[in-house]
Image 1 (tube, rainbow, N blue to C red):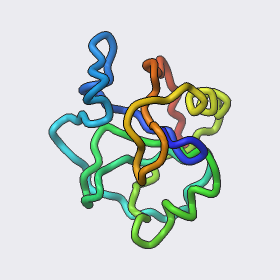
Image 2: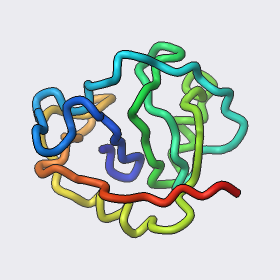
Image 3: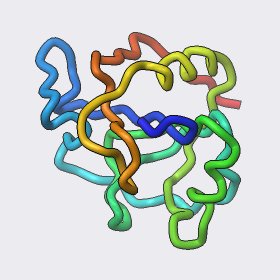
Length: 132
């Protein structure tokens, strides 16, 4: 998690109940990846996008939700504009904000920021996917 920027989840290997492996959380994956989709819209509060490494076509099970419109400045930069957008939160941003407010600890996050790992597991128990 990066406060004021994004929350990230979807590690189905090391972050699954009941056997969460905190030291490896966020590093898991299924052993396969998906090809990047071209980004044709703006990253804004509530955007749901594919997380990936710095390498092209490296996304798999992890995703992130944008917390603030100002994330467009970083995510939309020509060197970063490659995190495939596949949805938007249309209801429930209050839940996303509550997730973003959980206490964090551990190692500094990406870019040398503060801690980025929740001190307690955050489990999303249900979602509703709707097509426009």
